[in-house]
Length: 165
Image (cartoon, rainbow, N blue to C red; front, side, top):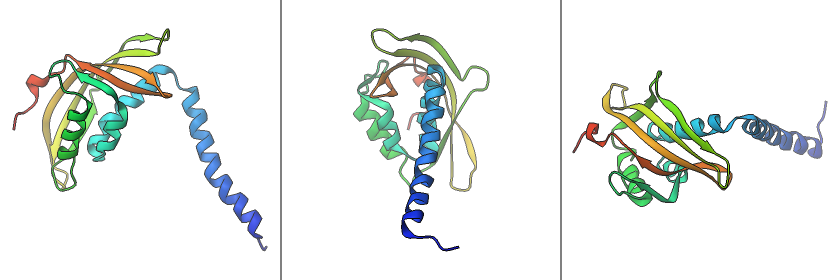
């Protein structure tokens, strides 16, 4: 059977559009809590994937860590240095029992949420030998901005359990 150009073009377009549509529909059916948890998981997976830009997209421009006073620029700069391709590898895993807890969710006047996270951050080498690095606990305040949940503030971060260089 011979395919003409317009038929092949429509097949190519459908091959792109259908998966995007399914992804959008699946996202629309998720609850706010599921979306927020997915945002936190994306933030944590950016460590292993070495994606400082993903960290930047999840933090708002006015982000602040209340315990240290660090802003978005500080966190993004630190993630660029820490996640550079030649450096050590990191990965983060939410604790199975208390890794993610939704503390509050407000829809009016703005969509906002507060979550408590507990994750183990490990450091390792390219060969995959990881060792515990930081038993991270933090409270995150998020807001829905531009159709996405983003972190506005972190507080009660377990900085005292983070190794110092």
